[in-house]
Image (cartoon, rainbow, N blue to C red; front, side, top):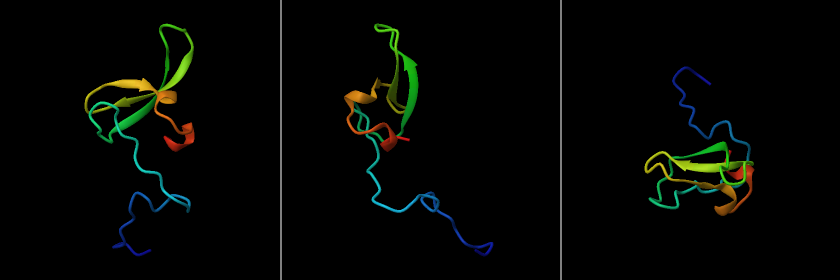
Length: 71
């Protein structure tokens, strides 16, 4: 690569089909992060998705898919 080459965000991904972005269950935005938090009802840690646009959070297992699809 020369100094003028642009390297996009997908340049370092391995091959294969790319999954569509996770969408918020409320606002349908794609600025969603994954966190590991304690559930106050069960006292167990669980993976949660949090939307940075509307601040709603929901358990990852309610969204579907496998955890490695969100990382």
